[in-house]
Image 1 (cartoon, helix red, strand yellow):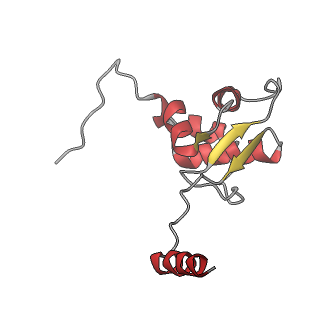
Image 2 (spheres, one colour):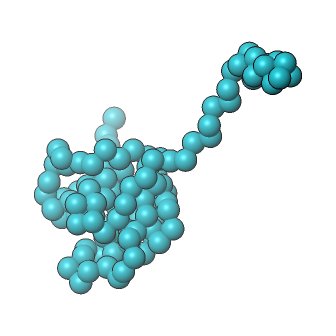
Length: 124
C-alpha cells in the first residue's frame, strides 16, 4: 500500500508545518515548561502586548482578557497543546499572564456528618 500523495496546489492546515512550530517555540524542547494542563485557566494581566511579542503571544494576550482554559486557547490558535504550553511558559516568565487552577465544585460533606450536626443542634 502506498501513502496518499499530496495534491498540487492544496495547502496544508496552518498548524501542521513543523518548521513553523519550531520557530514559534524558539527552538526549545519545552523541558522547563510551567505546570499547565488542559483545564488550567489563563488570564492576561492588564496592559497592551509588548512590541517584541510574537503574533501568537499577542493573540494569547488579546484572547485572555477574560479567563480561558489552555484547551480553548489551543483550539482558537489552531496550535498543538505542547506548543501552546511553551508559549504560555514564556508569557508566565515575563509576567504577562497569570495561570489559575480551575474552579471546581466543592465536594458534598458526608451525610452522617450532617445528621450528627443536626442532632447536636436539636439537643441544644
